[in-house]
Length: 169
Image 1 (spheres, rainbow, N blue to C red):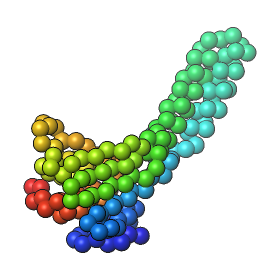
Image 2 (cartoon, helix red, strand yellow; image 1 turned 30 degrees about the vertical axis):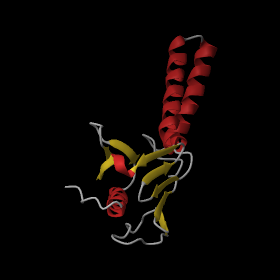
Image 3 (cartoon, one colour; image 1 turned 120 degrees about the vertical axis):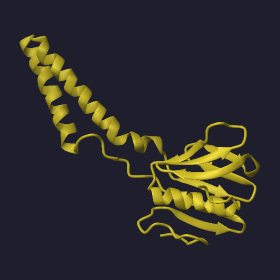
């Protein structure tokens, strides 16, 4: 599952992989499953779509606008359910990689971002997010979210250990 690094172990059910290459620590977080839940069970999406077609057809055949209105409402509900179910998978195109060197933190996901070590004053896991505290900025910068709190804490511990930061209080 993962090559253990020094310090605290990863949580037992973690999907995170880590490896050390010289003085560089590489942490890979695989993409989550594409279907991330949604508001209602999967069967409701199909039922909403079926009712949308049925009610809209009934409204067109009987020329009663109330049927068409409710048909469109069911189409909207089916569409929203699909958006809620798959939007998380659409946001994360692939795995997220963190490269931690003595001088730089690089995060590669859909885009690539870098933070020089000299600008970062602290790293803290505030579930459901991992925050970087950057000098000159009032608010912390969120770099990761939607992970297990133990995984977020493990990543924060690795960054703090690599850069000799005091553990946050």
